[in-house]
Image (tube, rainbow, N blue to C red; front, side, top):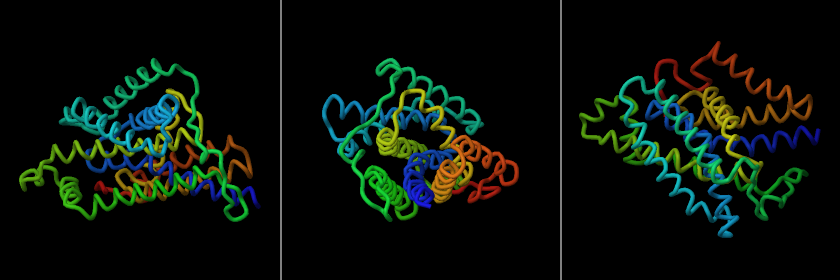
Length: 291
């Protein structure tokens, strides 16, 4: 029973972290109609950036977010300006190819700088634990979940409680009509992609703290993030959170009560079922995008 309870607790906490990594992906699709396959590599690049700041400049990973978030935001600006805004037609399909190329470029650069050795981010709160319902949970999971809640809450306020968000949602409903009303559609698109990329700074730091990583880790990561977004509904931030927590809890319970191999099968098997019987995901609209 204690193993199952521990699986549930860790599933909820790690689900929040994965939701933070996935929210940028669903935001990009919901606003830009861009399936950003490079999202996983952005997370890994951010993890390497946090690792480098700690390893070579002795900057605490959490404090380093003051540096890594602006850096990843600027990277998003560059990628959007260089590649994404050039896509005028068939954006969904072409964005998959373009973002995959961006991921390969970043993977090559990161591999050239750091080689293929596995790295990990260390700090006192990575190894320290705190008792939760009689279980000892690593501090990093609690910090990561709290950080995910705060950042996703800020994104929600930005989208639904600001003038920028009002313009963004108008653009989602009808891009051409929004432009005719005087909304700078290109500026909104650029900032949205940059914000989605900037969020990977926090996700990357947390990912590198809870497990070892190298450049190739982005392949497994993007598959998991895509599954979370597909199940939650492409473009639904709330759906991404619910799907992430639900999936991680289920996978952890299966891993401790049955076998880790079956937990991986469940992760991908339920995705196939959803694609067959409810392709818009649990919280997605059948004929419209949602942010």
